[in-house]
Image (cartoon, rainbow, N blue to C red; front, side):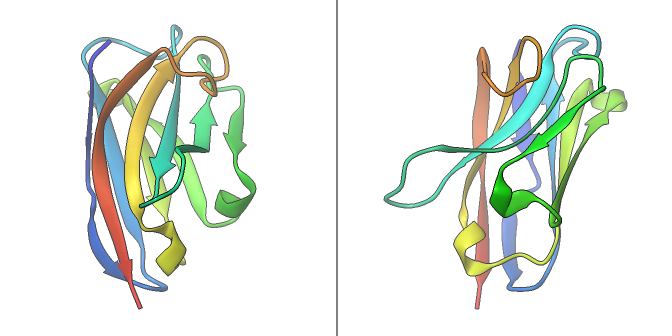
Length: 118
């Protein structure tokens, strides 16, 4: 599966941004999808995931209540709606695909940079 993430950019703290991921093949019913991020000088971390059949969504604590993951069936991919963004959300965000819950990736896309300014 090839994954293409887009939608990154610069936004002020408190603002919103939606990331999009397009997959090269149908993922619903086959792959769970997810987002990970890597901030400057930090390790890559899990952000959110949606299971292969959409019966479960999973969020890291920092994302709960602010981020929403959903399928984008038109692109065989996934969206990440982010609101109430904080400076510490600045990172490269990676789209992923994997079996089951989507929390353990088998495939990675290239990243898209999100910069949150104060």
